Amino acid sequence: QVQLVESGGGLVQPGGSLRLSCAASGSIFSINAMGWYRQAPGKQRELVAAITSGGSTNYANSVKGRFTISRDNAKNTVYLQMNSLKSEDTAVYYCTAKVTEVLSTTNYWGQGTQVTVSS
Image (tube, rainbow, N blue to C red):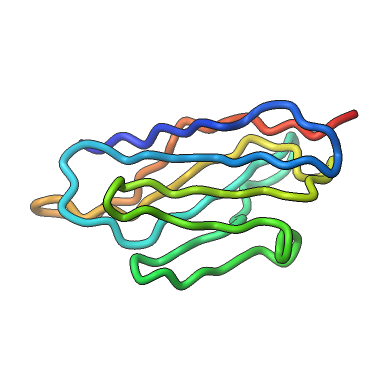
């Protein structure tokens, strides 16, 4: 079993910054892609950013130039640096990881962390 634990959410004013972290632990052989999704009230969950084990990244158009995803493979941790935050970035942010264990590969999700952008 694998657990993903997120941290770093909170309340921030428009134009501010936050850094989210997500650490994976458990029976991990390797981690392939990692990413961040978000879900705002009344909306579908959407991809924010993703990163492969080799470091290739992909971003939603709405966050390009403002958010940066990175990962520390030695720590099984993915980060999301969020700058120039806007009210429309308010959502619950979930991390995800495609984890290879001994006999299987599974997509795991974190419990979510709330990000609120408001003055």
